[in-house]
Image (cartoon, one colour):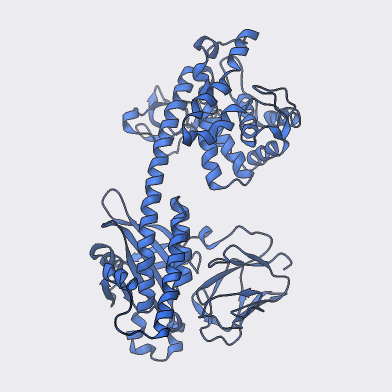
Length: 563
């Protein structure tokens, strides 16, 4: 119990971790451990009490209830990973010291059905315009104050959504705001696919991680095809549930769905549902969802443009990297293996998603300066003379020169310029020492050395990964940064880099060498002659061929596209 914790999953305090070493209280009152600015939450709403058997969640007689997995509870012994909800706020109980798990790590299976639904629908554009227009006639002070609060909340939500430019984070931010403003238990963003316009689930969030999430195709299609906002609450129309408590017992859901429209282009829909009469959606909730959907659609489309632009950049980098590979045939595949090794090390170091994307591009271009090196030097099978080595040593600076005039490539310069510096200051081109060397250069230096040691060349056989690690560890404090070396050791230990090693699958009966980068690829048993595989190192598509009982690979022509 000493390391158990409560994690805030939604709202302005999202990400907070509260150790469960004492009783934790929830409510609107400022004297609670976790104060919640939510009018659906009571002043003293609930507590979580650490006990020998686990964590006891206890409702303190709240007006709107405390829910676990969509069910209202008075007392409940929380299980590891279980999510509970008060008002519009979600929390998770975690056993032990693990602090990285969230509902998104155990995604719900989304089941789309064509069940009949009774629902009301309204033109989303009319709802949007009404939401932002002043009340007609004489409005009370209370009405004006409520409208002001709603507009302020939506404005703040729109600002938060618009601040993100990467699609996955846009989805996260959109759902954060939805869960804050409407009493949703589950949410799904469905986007139209590029091929046939069919709606596909792009993102989901559930207060019941791992549970099946049922959504109605009838509602979704109505919202998407007609551009209307839909609200349904079947339980309220059912005579069986006139006693409110029975609705909770039956776990009956109400739902809303709003189209995601950007400049008359319909991108998809956002769907939410909840459970029980206490949180049944109202028309006011629908108005808020439509207002959020407008900002969300713009942010999603902008993020899609950013993704397309990044893909174009990536394709350009691939062309440059392949040009280097084709010139230096003795080290073919080196660029791609170094890139993959560097990404694996960076993951072990805990670098974030944005930095990992940078590592990928930096790895791809770390040797781009070799374009300026004479072919005879690049392709020389024997040791270089002193004069030739001096010419080779210019490639980091030449690479930096190539990147310096292109704004979006400038962050990649450290990967290119400093990967031959040494911790003891004996490297080139500047003789920097220790932490004077940018961390990006130190990262590539370790990945570069590991590949050089483990790769087979025409003039020598590659080392085993164990021998290579031993040699690299001896270079800590001399050639390499110790923290980065230990991250490599960890990546090797957990199997993260095995399939990147050039010869890892060489001795398997059903394997081929990639015709582009020479890395051995294990072929799935079900794939035979004529099937296509993708090299995990250079990402080229390969067709499986056979000659005299031996399998080999043939590159798919560039016109067929890269994987």
